[in-house]
View 1 (spheres, rainbow, N blue to C red):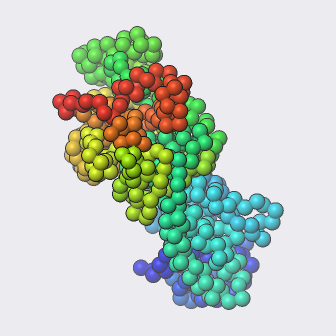
View 2: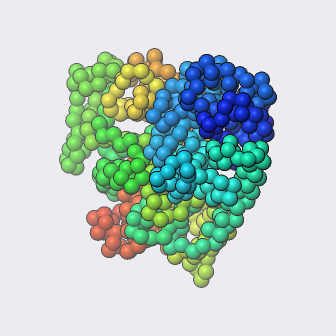
View 3: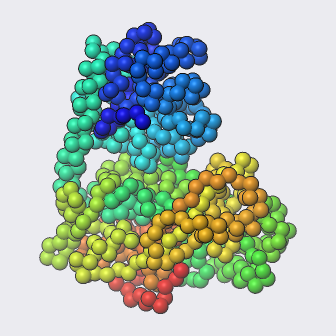
Amino acid sequence: MTPYPAGPELHAISTGKQKPEELIRIASAIHPYVTAIHVREKKQSPRELWALLSELAACGVPPGKLVVNDRADAARLSGAAGVQLPGSGLPASAVKKGFPGLRVGVSVHGPEEGGRAAKEGADYVIFGHIFATGSKPGAAPRGTEALRETVLACGGLPVIAIGGILPENCAKVIRAGAAGVAVMSGIWEAENPAEAAEHYRHELELAPAAGENRRRTEMNRDTDIVVIGGGVIGCSIAYQLAKRGVRVTLLEKDRIAGQASGAAAGMLGAQSEMHEAGPMFDFARRSRDLFPDLAEELKELTGLDIGLTRRGMLKAAWTDAEAAALRADGRFHQEAGGRAEWLSPCETGWLEPGLSKELRGALHLPDEGHVLAPELSTALAAGAARLGARIMEHADVTGLLTEAGRVIGVQTREGKIRSAGTVLASSLWSAQILAPLGVELPVYPVKGECFSVTVRQPLLARTIASGGCYIVPKPGGRIIVGATAQPGSFDRSPRLGSLLSLAAQAQRLVPALADAEWERAWAGLRPQTPDGMPYIGEITACKGLFAALGHYRNGILLSQATGVLAAAVLTGGAAAAEAALPGAGELLEAFRPDRKVAAAAVRQ
């Protein structure tokens, strides 16, 4: 195994100005200090490039540190560790499939490109240019704020900063979230390249400490509202608050969308999930209808696409009894003003030819849809950040600050943040925060397992559901199948028996899935309440503390109405909430945290 230096990554990218013998001499001197040496020699022929790579290895440069620019074939033949692709090049997933084992990087110029590279399977991205650089005269630098947004859009994928990187600004880009830096002339054209590389390495090793000092300073700054929890609910509330000009700080103990929000299939099933009139039904339909405007708004603000698709859903029936129940559902939705249509077996097959011919028909709900779940949370957080919010990952809240019976902020492992208001949106971890105050909001986990496959030709145009199984077609030939329901389990490992059962149900619905290519399996913990409704509103026993949690498997669907409702209440009270969401008073009454819930009313 190639020994890599500790600390943030340091990539040395050749400039194309050195003769081969000089490049080899410099690479031999700097490799102890760098993570990767990028051979970016655009003028060389394939034969010349292969000879150069071979000579580098022969001169003691570890092949495990060599990265070849846009030539996966040369990388593989020479034994190099990786390939760096341009943003307009082949998808990382295609290169990995053709050249398994290569570490694949992608060069990107903004959050949207970064998010796409992450989705396509890149191992890291290089983003820039961050600062002014002589290699791009007249081109405005993108700056550290754009770097932060790209880091967020990449959802945990390492982002390497490039462009105008000097030893003295390494700490600045690391504090902005970069996993490392890439340097060209600062090393390759230095009077002593080895000393220059060592200087960069030294500054990078100090950078995490500089970053921690900055975090402690930030942690002790005041803010208007603190939002605890970086799932889709917390991100939606932070975004809506930031739109209203509120100074908001979002704290996430792990990564944005690292729990249930990242494991969801992203379904917007307001009609498919609700079967009776009431506050949940009204809330769900209103929230679903907010998504088209939100998708456009986020794309314009952040450049990120949440993948909104509104092609409807089919709820399929295998038996006459199931058909009768679905017909009744259809009548209910029609009477409630929604669109719903019962389809005969022939009509079902005409709409979705890939479905089993044994079905007794299906209920067509044309207004249902879905989004890319992790991308939704990421875009909301990026939008909030663009509007001035502070988004802080790996910020574990250990307690609430109180004064005279009022919550006045939070305590984290790195400091205190005082605030005028605090929002608790960390559903399954809320108990440990509330316990010292003597407050209990019953929430329990329901484990849900899913898997995904890929197909070369589209099998479905819309979501299919039957019994406990749903099938959601996503862009790029990806299909998500879910989901099991195991109440009370904190285990996030998918189990073979559950996956086999889901696969059998899915294949029965869509026989051609038997030929799909396996992608992956996962499990998420969905936060359920005893009566099946979320807690939204101020916790009366703790003034200054607002709850927004317990959305179960409807977190994605309900996120937007929850964000609008919570932000309106927090900034303008009941009157503002009613103006933002007519009927808000009835919703807040139904969802109030101090309502009496009966354990016997548990919904699974």
